[in-house]
Image (cartoon, rainbow, N blue to C red; front, side):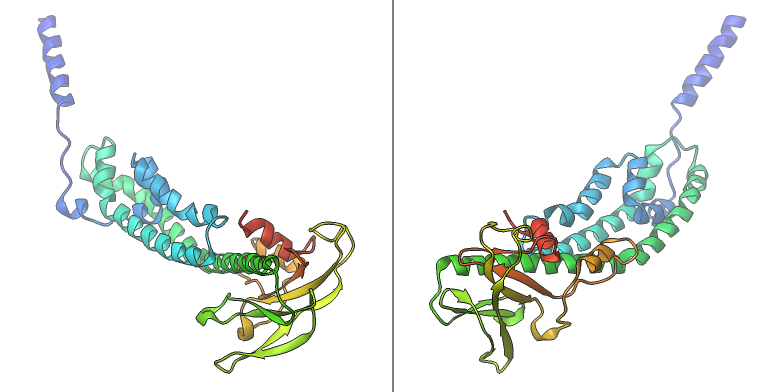
Length: 297
């Protein structure tokens, strides 16, 4: 009798183990999961959707890791594409969240599943609120990166122009703004950059030509060959007449890079030392930071 009772209990346990989990109702299965949308990396890792979580994580960090290698124009395109794809992935995560999460864990039924999902809601709401708060900081950060990339590109083009050799009176112009209008100029006279003048473009816009020949500083201040201290300073205005036509100091750069002032935009005017065969930035300046961080090697 005891053996028969044991066998019966064993059979019941076996039946229970083979019991199929109830399916979700169409309303819940097709419902939008706010936690999967607002916390796509954390939520998807928690519910064994690693590929979706990793893809989302890679996309969000892609601009940061590639700005060393891409041009300013490609960076702008990349930001647009990445932003669009991350939103699409977050929506996909939210739409498919309920089905995949229910199947990923052992829930007794739909009620048990919905009860567990309520724990995620406060974190999801907080995450969306945080995203809204940091969005202006992200936009400004991308704007500053684009400006630094443009400055590094301008320096490279100017260096190429110097190395090619110029005739007396030639005008150097580097395009960093729209409509193929160079945004800064330097007049090349007898092997040096010299003078202060203006140039009138075909569309009637007048720009200032800037280039001042003087001693560029002590050997310790120069980032180029230490024996070369005589050069011309070339003022680079990334926005042309659009302004604000102001320099960013190192103190301001430190504030911009801090959490407190992360929403501050970089100013648009920079200075480079132009030698007869190269261009360099003064040590300990915003220009040096920009070139070390964003110039292509």
